[in-house]
Length: 227
Image (cartoon, rainbow, N blue to C red; front, top):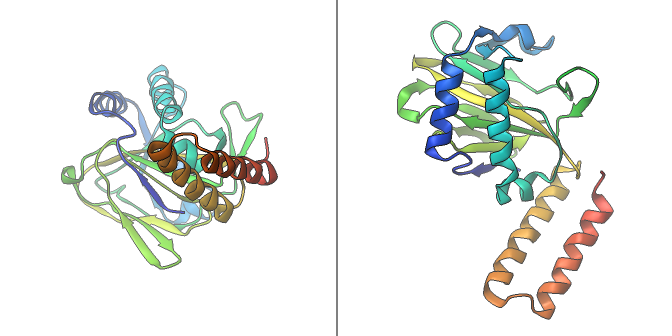
């Protein structure tokens, strides 16, 4: 499932994150790339572990936890603390690749399975040229370039790339989610069912049919989910 989630961060929030990361220490993104990705990765990443980085990670995680669309679509079990990247100048693209299946959590004592990849845009589209996130979907390539504060989710099994940035700087946060429901197809069914339930509650309240449908949702989640 490929999903655009609008306004994950309010304007004052993404501007604060952007100003903080812009002032941080940036390193060659290839230092964190795997064996496959290092051959096609040309970008910068914010150095991890600083107080500013941790503060911005916490801000984004709070925003995700209050976003019903994100929670419904991902059914998160674990979320890797957000990282930050920048594309500009010579470090301006990331070729076709698939994200690694297992990611190390901070401290290295725990790993997260990458079910869902997330990109949260921190630069407005008119700040840079190029830089589209291209995701190979069942129906062909999908090109994504969103307003600052907006986010896209897509299966981590997808081949994807970032097109060369030819002017300005593309700044974003990226991270991965391990879902309680491993199957993308099952998550999509639950997401559609949850959306229908919310619509029915708005129009009819908790009537008998809505309660029965909610029971079906939770029974499916109980059947498919892992904690």
